[in-house]
Amino acid sequence: KWQIHYPVTHRGCVNSLWAIDEDNLVMVGNDITVFHKGSETHPLVNTSNDLFNQNDCMAVWGVNLNRFWVMDRNGNVAEFKDGQAGKVVVKGNFSIDDNEVWVSPEGTVYVIAGQRLYRLD
Picture 1 (cartoon, rainbow, N blue to C red):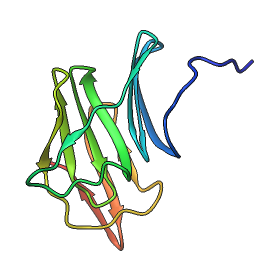
Picture 2: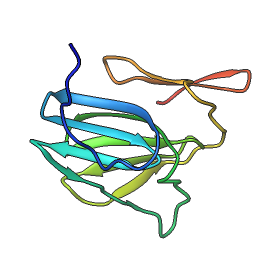
Picture 3: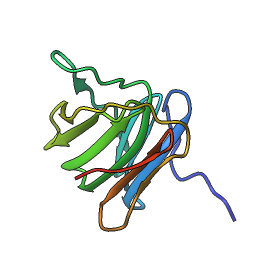
């Protein structure tokens, strides 16, 4: 049966969820929300020199809550490390429609944009 796991204040839609275990997960969409043992935080991306749309995220993947990546709809990828604000590490050059991002269990990221399949190296 379905049961409420955590009440959330995540704003808007959720496009992707990445979980380490039942107490540690990250949701992205119109917001970035990190859950750690029942507490909720909303980390920011340092966008002073980069164009990252924090309100339109499409995918999340990572190693643990101290190192994970979030991709926005334009293919920009921000890395979050050790609780610090995210930093853009890959600049995108395409627009992603809904449900066209896939992250393999090994962490390889694929995107379909237009008539092309991209792989993040």
